[in-house]
Image (cartoon, rainbow, N blue to C red; front, side, top):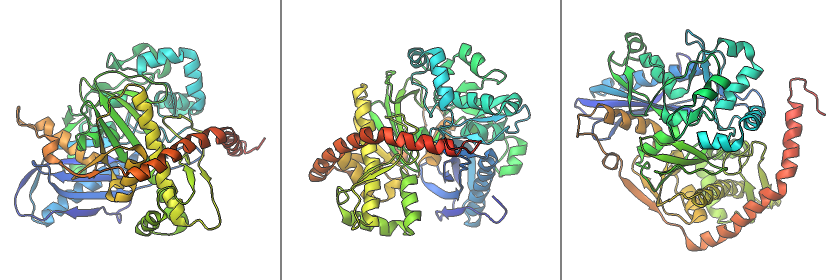
Length: 524
């Protein structure tokens, strides 16, 4: 970001002084910040868009300098806008959040040794996943860490750096994710939350809630293990240097923070046993919360955002990324595409799409899966294609929900959050495809708001902590349509069959592309 890039700031006008918490989330396609008063009202919000780097097929990276630069820009922009509007905002605590699990390795002076490797959308570490699984045994990995090793796990990605870039790894001394990196820059603390740590499989013991020391020493030698804490714990206080950079007063408490999907769940109160949070974003994410550690080969078992909770989580590799691709490809705006998709109707006039345009995460755990569009004719329109893409993500959600329930998850209610909740069509298609009611809260800005809430709880006097149900009440319920649900029951069976029948072919195509993009550039 240069000096001419400024956040697009929205602010609520008022004329009094507020004790506020600042929440900032570093996402895949943008960073968002909010100033929130003690009642949960958003006084100011700001967003900065950014891009990830995709240097090779299956690689998704980001320069960690962007995370800090955008945090400082958001903090200053929100403060400045509040001042300009005559709104005296006293920041009493800072909440941080970010995409994950990511792998940012830094040297002894906290200089990154390479760009950060992002979460499950980055599929480069397949060889390391296979080697570590063969070495340790899948059953033992699941017993300790809760989940099989997949492209979502951070442990194999650290091993990939050691294998592929030994000079960079030799300089590495610490491990960060976006939230923990912000906490480091703000306070100097080297801390990682338990939830994020539980996604560094096989390095964390889910039942013990601690690093698994034998495997840490074996697979990440030379890297200091972060201190573990819970997302809402206070990591430290803003240093003088960070205050100068951000405009946040020195001494302001900063929470530990966690991965954005879990902070999103906090933002809508979807963190109690029986809750399922469904996040509509660049990717789709689902988190079912309970008190038991559920293990199933095709989902991710993690600890929860709060002590005593466990999660069964899943994620689609594309959702908003797929609709954005179609938008760019057709040179149309979202309102036009949504209107045309609505006119297309359930079933997209005979189209069926697999949304695996960036491989797929759960429940098929197939980084070499690829997008498929079946049933195309010359009279299909871009509206049909857009409808098919929305339906594909909805059927992907259903696949995850059914897998969670088969593993023993008790799903009592669905709470929707994220940018995709702004339009009713997508919500309706998901409810129709899953047969489930969705609750939509008043604020769906997501992780930045959840981070601000956690910060408010962290500094509240004993017995006076705010409640998210009061901050952010449910304002909308999406009921499934019975006739549409019957159509999607048939489509779901076809969806499963389409993947099974095309898997071998698309794997061959993926392998061919991998070879063509190899360092030697030789197609064999």
